Image (cartoon, rainbow, N blue to C red; front, side, top):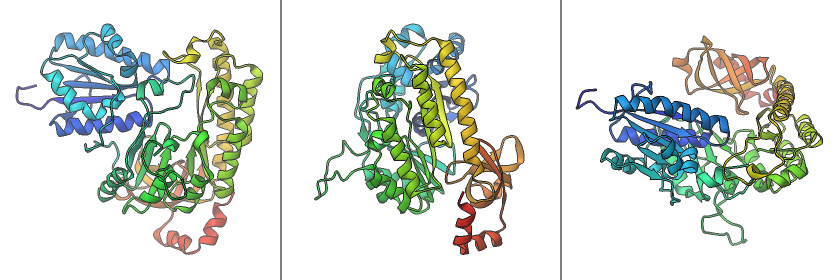
Length: 468
């Protein structure tokens, strides 16, 4: 690199949607500082790992990546190494002892302070920023990975205390953004041509609890439901999604709003974690499997076509075979469109990690395999109901395995492939007749404009096609 060439940066992101949104914001800051994005981390001058600590294997992967970069730093002392995100927050100074070559360690709450922190590094300091802070309002322009869909953070942090989860320790207490700031960000996205927004929160149903204000009827006026009504008419935005929900706070009022608001997609991500009440109590989840089932039943009352996805943990400390069977029963009864599954992994600083009733790896692995087999079977059955239906697919990209096909998602979040030219179709909503259904994706044929118009003019017929 010549003396006057701009520094190049690379960001590798591990983990959840919140981390992806944080990475986009940090990339926006680096762009604004005049750095240039670089595809290859081994060619970059500033390398940032945005880390996840939810499971042990993600954390170990970070250390192996860091090892390679630390070696490189011995040959290139001007290389800047940054660890951001949840491992940074959890490990802090310990990370510096393990990898002394690091220049900056910063927790997720500090993502918006990246420029200030890097300027201290460029001036010669080694910085650890993990103290709790009030999160600054987003004033940076994120460098978004997509030109069609975008994440918008609405609440940071989490006040729950699930016994297995490290998130509250590493992401801090709940801090909601104001409805005005969220709407303003969405209006910019609408003007830039984005068609779909996903509102993000670690526990999104808690949105607004920390904001002041109640209505005359005594109800808090800043809830996720109120926010959906407030941002629904933003020009240009045609689809709105939100994640992640907590069963404890999921209300009928929210379900009714989703049914009433045409832009809100019929897809709900509501983790249940276990189908057994004793395990749920040990997890400190604050609900029963009966309550969870009632929520899903209520969603299907209002929106029979809604897709339901969730998260589940097997092999939690003390989980018996009978309790695991209760999880299998819940999955069998509900029939999820998608389920993110994991074997329990003890995380530092969480109560469950210290319990002496840990299960052996073999049992956990066996249960995970059995659950995954059932998930795939049920997902294939759920997917089958799309066959022959007309679906509106928002085109996002090319099918990496077949360049003659484009891919996008239905309103119910099913990945769908069909023949088409990305140049013409990117960002377009295309009516597709589904001809093939797999467990987690669909294939279809795009309708001509005339056929699509006819189907729009005959909603009863389209609805008839859409019913299972």
